[in-house]
Length: 329
Image (cartoon, rainbow, N blue to C red):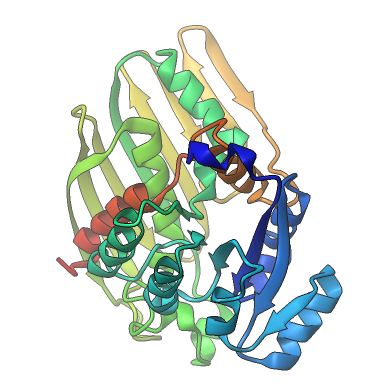
């Protein structure tokens, strides 16, 4: 959107100012030069007012339509649970406003495609908060791969597991494990980050299959999944995600013809390069507000000085991968 070079300030509104916006994302918009949060919306009017007061935001709403159609709002960040992303996303597209939607773009490939096409048809920028593509830790891995530090890439494997939480065991409601909101449960919320990142690091996944089941029967969503896939360049991949194991594990290994790269998607571990030159562990700290680089990359694209790596098209492809593993398509 190179025409936006003349824009001095882009005024954002947030729909769904819940936990994710308190530290991970909201302050990143306020810290980015050229961005300003001017309005927030939450269905609970008192909570919306409290959030606005604590974060120094002048307007608050309990009706999303009012925020979307506010003439002082240039762009909208949708930070609600995934089952409402399509509803709000299509309204923002209709209003002709820039949009960023939390990941996953929607609970299904079809809904993601509908959102993407609504913005694409109007040539309106649509970003998705797969912020790991913008983080320095993972961009270092990309640099190693691009420099052929482990030779030709052959295979990638990711295993993610964790024990059932107290909330899972209690039976108390959690939208993240409600199949009506997210059929894949924690897989939807967590695995989407890694699979999207693998597309960025290794090129798009072109074929994928999976198995998904509910082993524990603690909630309606799936809790155990496995998959295998193929990237466009012939790189193979495998993954397993289980949310009822005794221990937590988050380990990715990229295998090359001359070495490996090991890292975690979520855990605060070093990235480790191993090749004929030895073993090089690097700890690259995330920023205080983990979406800061993602938000700054949006700003760079909007003023015409860069390109954001996570958009509606890339996020829709990730939704296709997720659906193939879960069994929606």
